[in-house]
Length: 436
Image (cartoon, rainbow, N blue to C red; front, side):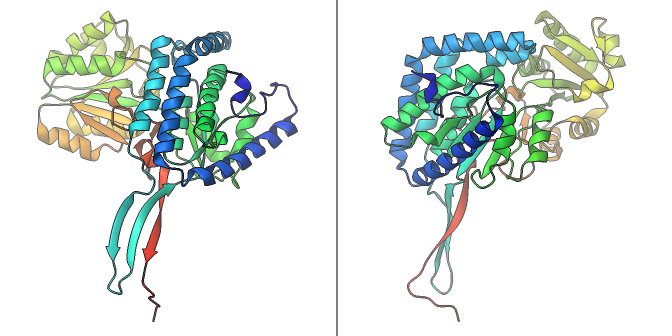
């Protein structure tokens, strides 16, 4: 599979002429707009067939993909990326198969395009329907994680959208192979290959050119850290679906079952520390601290987690490192956890709403009233009761995959799957009515 099939006439040299790069990004926008018009009415069966074919091609290209990924991982290490970022970049045969299965899961989803969201008949006989339609062209800017390349392309396709993907420098070669497989599958199923395009360079200037394509791109989805989100919000006139960092909390209420608290906390933090749904701060009710916290800390230390705690937490365990103010606002993406003892439910909710990123937060509690208060008052896209924050994932929600977790107040909010990548229009049917 030639890597030049990844969405351009050929990958540009990073030192290439900026004007040529700008022109190529604009050409990608034009091609995407044309592809989006064709996709808007493409049969659901054909889109699903293309996704299944992409999964087959990806499995067949496992060796090539892993070789490309080895080079990406070496690039990431040489560039000084954190261990968490390197882990996000790294693929193995199991992860490749998981990417392929993700494509098949999206293929099996109901097609959201054309769904009648609501319908009613007016007294004059007009039949009015609100119908789901594609957004159009979606630009996705993200860091590391080559699986996002497949997920984003698949979800956009399922919802009838064309995608322009600008992946992280660390996953550049891996993404070329993935997009090449998806484009080949599109063409083999009589769908426009330009429905999925990959920005053909690691050059950061390409991001600015993509953000300027307001005449072709309908929505920008940035998925990454604060600096990326801030840059996108500052530079573009295109509507943005923001996916901010995952500063997630788990709160142990005084009514929590101790064994459940231990199990949920361990999974929320240590299952995979590099994902955005990993808990970064543990809040423990003062009434539960003497009984619950020592065992939780023992579990975490045994798993190799560094604990940064307030003065009361330090008194419970001498292995705890003193926490500073910055620890309450840090997304570690590493085996590090900030721990604070709080004065009850209200203090826990206040802490989450002040320090959190409105991503995902959980309460472990046996008291239903306390749980409902937390779920109602915590202002986050995802709130959980007696479950790990690592369930913050579109696949776990039944969406097949996700582009990310939207942390804004306006919809879409939470996991963004195919259904969330549609908008709607009103279809009005009459039989000759004229307005008096």
